[in-house]
Image (cartoon, protein in one colour):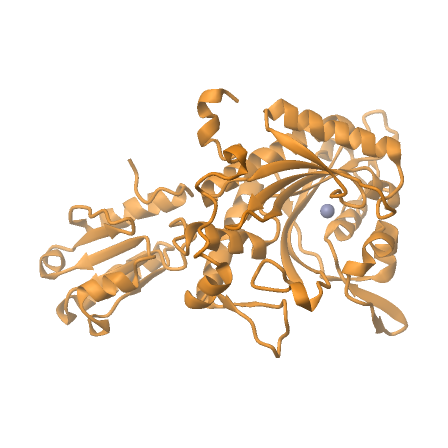
Length: 430
Ligand SMILES: [Zn+2]
């Protein structure tokens, strides 16, 4: 990519990893999550097991639908798979021997041991294996927004960033060795577009390699090949990165897209991984053009990682003022007096019909000024006074303080719908 677009390109990290768009320290997602009614916890449900309130669920739903649509356009097919699996499944995948400290203990059930899954990969490997596969089907891109579990210690749990129940935006691409680089590059491009839509930026890219110790599968030649492929992809895209030992998955190296919180603490949001190990473990095959059986490579990738961590970061980056397409409430209609209430209700009904999340702020809730202050995080505020009501118009105020000329209600709605459909961070078209 050229230098001229680099500063604005969401794929490029903040210079030095500490530009001005790091979250504001006042925007702690745990405090804002409670204040804005997005999520909460209950000791009876348990630590690290937050529940989502309606406004938080609306944000999560919008995020998940954006991801699914982006994946569909990029040629992924979605599946559902259960959050439980037999212990034997994780013995085959290698999770049991390399990762069991992070897993919930097995449940005994009718003489079998069943586990809450620590990842989606083994289920997807079995779905791949359930049919005979031809080279014509590759790359086969299988995606799922699915639940997984991590037995985090109670001392480290908090908010949405350290949880025991995780909704993972996951996908596995089964492909030939020759397709790996293109698929990894395509995944990084999806990640870049999503970051642009979400208004977030990476702090840095990390090439995560194995470190000393026994928690990695032993296959030096495969590790070397995987790392070389990922390095080639990063270099090809011109993305700066740092290599980090000891951060790889147990089955292979990965590209981690790191984000930073207000204190500069980094965590991994998105990943792209190349895996030769699990296709081997599960005996995955495809029939090649030569009629013989071959082993595919598995590319694991996540655009926004866990939905919990992604929403926590969005809350902190935007201080609750989400991009309009993600906002829990996108439009509030403000009738100046009770006389305009029927017009406001009709306008909101039209908004709901068009798929917007919209509400009326009733005159009884206070003066117009007080009501506007109360909905200051809502991207679109439609004021309807006597003049507007008389000819079916609205006066739009944008969250950033801009006021637009009164316009016919249906035109306003079409303009807002067009902005939302663009999945950007701008509140209004140019
Ligand atoms: Zn995976």
